[in-house]
Image (cartoon, rainbow, N blue to C red; front, side, top):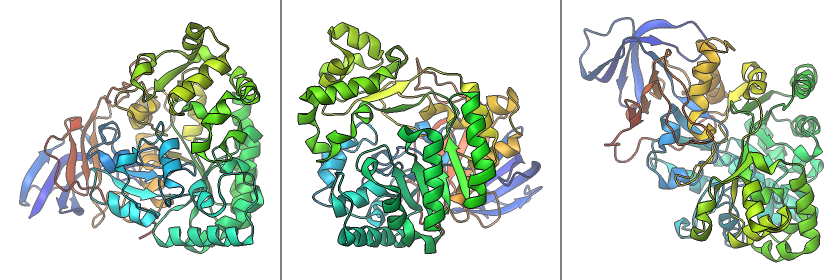
Length: 521
């Protein structure tokens, strides 16, 4: 007897092969049968999904769900899109590994990105311990990177100094330990804290121990070196360390830039390393305001930053960074302080004008008031410039989603998968629906070591999405981002319903069905 039969659906199995009519029988957490007709079989429940697509659950390879999966049973903005697995600890910055010396810094620094509060930390140290905490903690599966800045801070501190031999040996040992605990590989964000001081040689040496595991080098490249320069550095690191390379949120902001990057990717990068990238289907992005501060302020770690923000020289350099941006196309997405909460959603240009100060002074003062925790959303640019990046065969889905239920966050948190499956297929005809599903399911699952997931196959885990190909679409906008998509009817994680009729289930199984996964295990 099956626990559930999904009857009369149109099956897209995740491999890119053509759709077919099929019934799916689910028993426990696995797909027990796929057949043209299971009507003669017994089941505790039969769900008629006539006229609907049934496909594997989606894998988000770049996000900032790290703490939300710890404290939210069903992260509805993600499960309602069909994401059944999250790859966490991106950009080289997260909540493990940590020790008693670095944990206060990381929790303080990441409040406007990954949202852990001090009282929610109970002393875990390594990636393995964090994954153990996430097992059956939420509605989604989770697998983790090993964030480079966390590793480096414990061994060598936050500053410019090059790690000495002893410090490097500790870093390499921690990379080895992280891989043994199930990490996908090492993530870096070379424009972010700590890593901004790291040389190419340093990163190569630290990453070498993951080569025997087949681990990935996953990177937010050194954009201040130019995007192409940053991609070239990433490929060099992968080639020298002997590991595959995956670039986070890679895109060109002009057609000429896209042509230049694709020329390098297709004619050089893919010949030197096993190469892939992710991007969300929007051109504008989102990041922390403190990302725009000069590197020097980070040398004592996040808890040492505030005194630097009154320095006129720091403000002057911060002002030069701001001068490269149009503040009338950037809004405040979230901040923690109740005194400033009414500014959420306001354009930076309007906020600055109201203060009567220079931009660098107004925004440094805001960072001081909010203890560095200010999230921004950019909303200028033509999303059609992303289309070639979605169509390329190196592309995998990464939402880069940042969640704050009381914030005005980027619509990518709510709309990335349905935008690719709906408008990009129906209206823009970038690829077939079968190809789109593969980009969201099987390919990222294989790339990031989610064993027996990403395809609808007998004996594989029952991570399943049911949707209407005629109506699936994103509804989230920059003005009103917290809107769930149209067209996604049901989502199952390990055979358990987490979305029913487009909304989070009220009676989520206890414990929740999401598993902590280990790379290729």
